[in-house]
Image 1 (cartoon, rainbow, N blue to C red):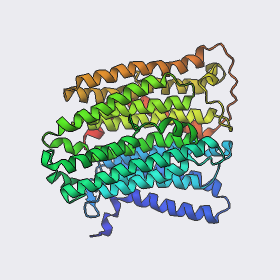
Image 2: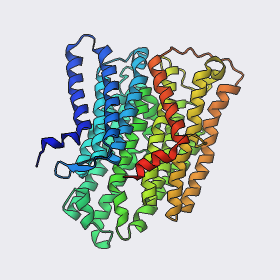
Image 3: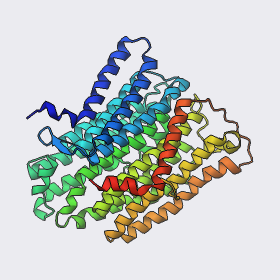
Image 4: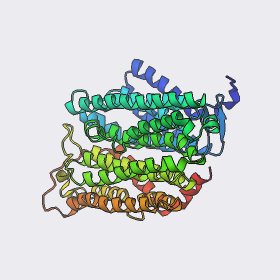
Length: 475
């Protein structure tokens, strides 16, 4: 493999984060005040990488013998992962202390998970996709059970690990069949020889298994069964990271591997019905089931399933507008969900209390700022303008219409209408319930910064969506 030291600037974000992980390990082992250093080292590192990613977004290239890429959409995903993780870090600083589960390893695991996400987004070889996926997933398994003295957290980790391992089997078997059919795992070379003819049945099955494996990672129906229990049992800031950065990384892999397949003949006849089926089931099941939830984390878990369906509409469209819409949606969803889970983490009691929707009764009177911010995030998640969530749905629906999938866009609109109920229900409870608010919120300046920044971003993306989509579509 050719290695040129001058190419290091191309993959500098990966080098920086890998170096920070090593430094963090040394600090955790040998420095007494590691608990004060690691959180801010992690946050600052993520912000630096996010800034550097945007700064070098135009420097597109491929390195390591075509295994990794840089620039363009890769760097846009880098920004989503790292800026989102920086907000998670702000939310976590006081949350771990409040809940009594502070351990320095938490930040190292978050750093390692983000490095895995970045490897997935920059991969140009299916081996690198798999390595990045496993690094991210293994960190998430541990983070889900980080509150090891809580039965729900242990249960969440066990379920996530067992079902995640099962899904990984689909992906690996799919990769094996793809290699047997094409004799390569390089994504560019793969589609030079890949066809959707009947003679390539092994390759088609391999690609289908790959998609099914990642359907688990994005929590699409019928591979969603782990989501409610894991989201509920995991520490809330871990849930925030899994539901945003983890989902965005899985969709980055699907964009990378599945989208180029639509350039082949007969691809639309095979892939579009399959993806549209997953999208339809996810949107309707997630929206309808979320109505029945009384726990706010479980409600957002089923909401996450529905949002996976909306994003899949862009993939089913199989056109450039669909991919651009997916990336915009993922950016918007990241900050909407981080803000919502950030407020939940702030309100949550150290004994996992204050998680029922009824507990939020009267919040608008006692804590008007928190209630107002949570209302903004609920409006955005429901797709009400002028917030970013509206334009995320708009772009994927337009892509579906251009691909003659009007019926799928209509299903998405129907699901959005259903979802308005359970989002607005929370707002009604906060502002119009006659019950007195019994919550006692412990102030956290760092968490409030993360929440307010998330709110500002979804408002700005809603007011100026054209600027963001132009940046994405440019590449």
